[in-house]
Image (tube, rainbow, N blue to C red; front, side):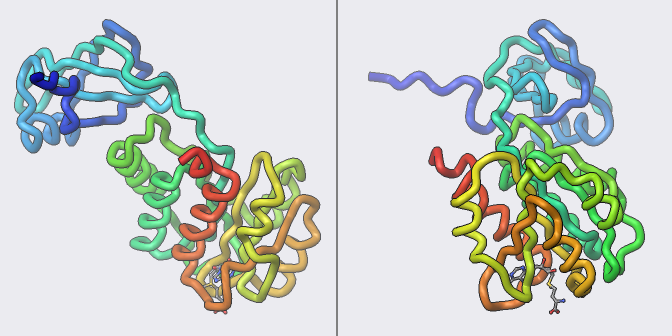
Length: 250
Ligand code: SAM
């Protein structure tokens, strides 16, 4: 029996668009996206393209016109419903360019709902290019099959973050000086959560005390070694996804 080839084919390019998608909608792509489809993926009129807008799910579109600098696509049908995003926030102190880009990419791939930056006493990076971070998260979502892009929050100062904290959301504070083994702590608690990761220089003793005094905060350990902040972030999020997130569903 001849197997019917999957439609759209596995290799169909996948792009995020800002505008809300719906069946019959016309989508005009220019700039980098037009170059990617026309120049890199050699998309021709009639070819399929997968699109997602972060809200309504993933859609199938067909290329209508393909020009050097512009493409138009027509949306035909919805392929996937919006994803059930695990209710996890990653809160991290800004890191140097390469590391914070990596962290943003991994946060998106691993499934967080929000990436928020926090300024602490030992934060050495004074400016973060949020547009660049968002572009990294969009690219990660396009590649890993997400139909949502994590929300990105600009830096807040630690005291303000703690002052406005909703104690109903568990705050897992990654503390290299010691705490409850992270996996055990995460298995014991259900519901909305956040993971707080310090800067390369770590939190000050006063900051640690202030965080630990916060209702809903749990100091957790990620093992006996001092991890780089980006490593700590990726491993803590992975543990939460396995203990309380959507990795439990396999
Ligand atoms: N200042 C610290 C030092 O040099 O001793 C190291 C800070 S570490 C590079 C950056 C952040 O990663 C820490 O603030 C903490 O949030 C997290 N982290 C690193 N290793 C950890 C561990 N073993 N357990 C819990 N959190 C850890």
